Length: 228
Length: 193
Image 1 (tube, each protein chain N blue to C red):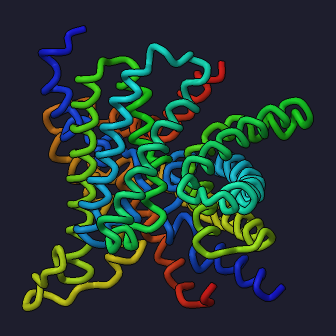
Image 2: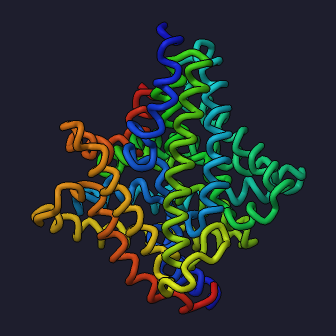
Image 3: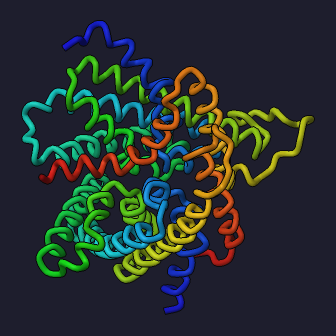
């Protein structure tokens, strides 16, 4: 396997070209639910990255031992175990953040990004590449949801990371920290991302289309494969 | 009875799973392209949600809590849900092939639907009784159904619209979702569930 030369490209792949949030449109639930504040986005991103890196590593290590038929439940168990670790760590170390993120921390288990990376990458690659993939994807996710959180916090509450920034500029519009604002900011950011990064490549249309279908239905296809 | 009704209305409108709690966004965006698939998916979700609420409530009450194993809730719930979905699929295939035909494709998708695990985690947080938990699951499923069917109608119309290049596909869908979600903000504060 050509691991050595591709390690860094694997890492950067997750940042822009295959950014899980803006390009692959995976893990939409946390990206919208916890991004009322930039800080929450950062916390959620860090938690998900931890789970992603660890589960990618373990799955790439056990991929040859686990029979194909039971790999879905096996992967879910691995992911759930790491999620529980994060949950307990957060409850002990950062109780305030834990309260803010609430049930979305245990819901990392069903975050499509983690499962999709297990299926699409860790299952086929060695541990080093899998860690890099986890880091890249995790960082891409973290940056994306921190950006969404920042936009919503600045427009909706007039603060960034809790610091007032728009005092003399405009009055914040509360709608942005309400659910509709989440969808709207996300929509505009995905459009902007499409615009900026697709001019160089003509395959944009195919990409966006594939993204819709490759989200959760992607997981489902994987599951069908698992049962067959 | 009054309490159950409050849970029902609360979970359907005030805290609609998709549009105000952001649970189950993936299927909401993924299968809402046509009303017919939206109906199939919703039916499967309601079915599994009710069963999984009952199963996870029993597991939590009689297995985890008496043994002080609450910290295993995430693992236990997700495995129970995965097993349940598999079981439902097998049983339906054998006993009610017509229903299996209608819902079959959507069933494996449901394991990774945050709404199912989410409502299991919520009844723990809120200390619901068995009946309350099941009603909550049913109501959450109905709320999901309502959001999905409403939205699929809008998306079918969206197909025919002239949209700026960069907004084609997901972005415009998200913005449409935002507008649908605005209507649900109107329900906020209706009842405190």
